[in-house]
Amino acid sequence: GFCGGGGTPLFSASEVDVEVAWLSPQSEYRPTEYLQAWVQFWFDDELRLHAAQQLQTRRLQRLPAAWNTRALREAGFAVDQARLQALVQQFTPRIANAPDVTALLTDEAQLTKALFKLAVDAVGYGEFTRAKRGTGTDAANRFLDHGNYLAYGLGATATWVLGLPHGLAVLHGKTRRGGLVFDAADLVKDAAILPQAFLAAMRGDDEQQFRRQCIEALTHSESLDFMIDTLKEIALQTARLAKQSPQEGRA
Figure 1 (cartoon, rainbow, N blue to C red):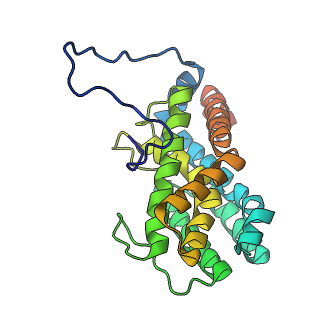
Figure 2 (figure 1 turned 45 degrees about the vertical axis):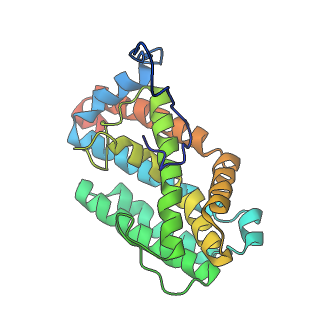
């Protein structure tokens, strides 16, 4: 699963040697309301794009408050709020008006790069380049990889609670089973994980210290609740659009 070796947020364990091997039952005593809503729009490219835009908009709107907490300022993450607000104002219409998923992914990449620059300047980290696929050797890259897996764990939990299969992604990796987990994790990665990664790198924290700070940040910000509520709202709202006529729902 999406635990990165640390078992967050859930562990699954079993005995190695057993006399009788029982198949683990697949509990489906979960609500079907959100799955039914999700599949009403998921096969429509335009509505799937709309859902992806809503996810990215919620991600962006969460940042100004999340990056301006007293705890972060006291820890040394004093981000330039004017620059952050300018980014929000710049990317909000770009996300809303993205013509397709490719354009939206491009906007996401540019936004993420700008957020890294803000964080680097906030803590005085110096030169930074985000490494792909766990190839980074500097502290910030390693912490970002570690912290993102904590967010993936929450994403997997949020989608499971709502009964949404991980393969029904709206933005990331629609050819992979875990794509919706990555979509959900985007809601909180920048807000909760990114500041902690750069703060931990500047302090010289070890992995355990960083992990504790991330879990505290995710808990205090009620990140899991936010992910669940956002997915619920997007599912129901986009399903309503699917029920309308093309002229009414997509004008």
